[in-house]
Image 1 (cartoon, rainbow, N blue to C red):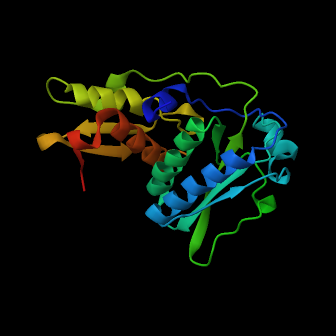
Image 2 (cartoon, helix red, strand yellow):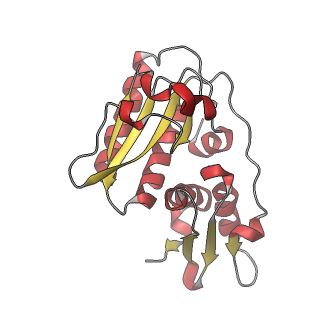
Length: 221
């Protein structure tokens, strides 16, 4: 599948088969993670066959099953939007490799994760990954007009960008963002207050770029 098809088909999955990620797929995912880590300057790692983090009350509350593989993201403070943007790059690449994923902020035991942030950095988030028991379900979404602002007629490229932005996973499915079309095909993306909203904004921006095409617009500085 191509990247747009992967975004359309990808849904959050919390229940996984009790099955190891095969070596070839794991190696391909490691290569993606290495490349994205170098591009972003974030410390992104793949943890395989480690069941401790997703055990006990938190995992049960989050309805996780057989989650033994996950991706961790650490980095300097203030990089929440980058975490979302580059993390979603990996999430969609995983989908293209036949894997399922779920962004996880709280419902796991961080103390059991064998990855620690370096001095001057922070541990941001975890992404569950593996072979899902199912492919997940589409999320409900707010109407497009509540998530964007355009004066006059909406250009087709902007609409395409919003179609994909609306598919972006967000914490508690709250979609606390607004995408605004300014003059000269400049686009502003803003996060409102809420849990993980800045990370969500990075995911939204990545999706918008794929839908609209980077050549169609520029982000506001």
